[in-house]
Length: 261
Image 1 (cartoon, rainbow, N blue to C red):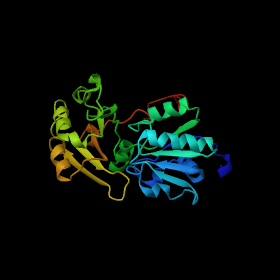
Image 2 (image 1 turned 45 degrees about the vertical axis):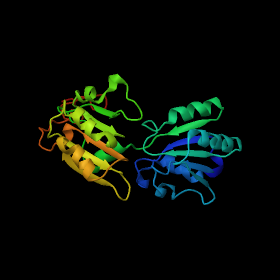
Image 3 (image 1 turned 90 degrees about the vertical axis):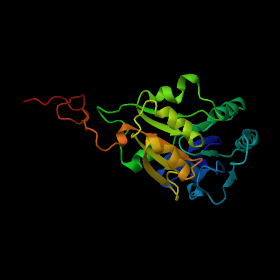
Image 4 (image 1 turned 90 degrees about the horizontal axis):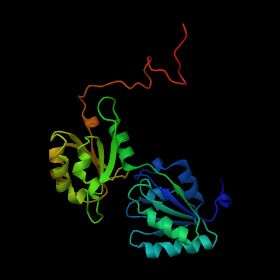
């Protein structure tokens, strides 16, 4: 793929949690060819842009509203330029791309979404844990607590905690005391919590604490943003380890039928 092959359009790209090496190959190729890049600079480290063209137009949008960002994207595409809208993590999670896509569609501007690694995936990799352990936990919940953005009543944190799944809590550091109280209604106080600050950034910080100390640890570290909480039975090291059936010699499937004797 070279520069001339990138069609004029808006490419909504997930930058991952912060580590430039976690960009997808497709994201790297598109960034390297883009004419204009609108980057959410408060959430995406500048190192992500190290492979862009020297003559690319880079616009920081951390202090801009959608009403300021949208006309720029529309103008550049109508001027036959390839535009990247660079978001942190994966665009499908808490990135506010819904209204952007609707506005682009209304303006007849073509767009494409390129997924990225989410913080919960980077956290699990760094912690060297599997979040779906056979016989222990088989569900992952990605959620947040109500703040400026209200969570629907059916998704209230305490009701989700009742599943005792691997729960990944985004955008909740400012309301962590309330979150802890709701989680303690269903998780044991000694349930391990991973507090993950700025995953993939140079100042990344991860600490493991019991659930009952989650709020105190957050306040002690003065964490108010860019923090993910991972609450999971899988973080406990002394559980009984049940083996997955997938690679068990007694488990047969279409690619590994029962051997003939």
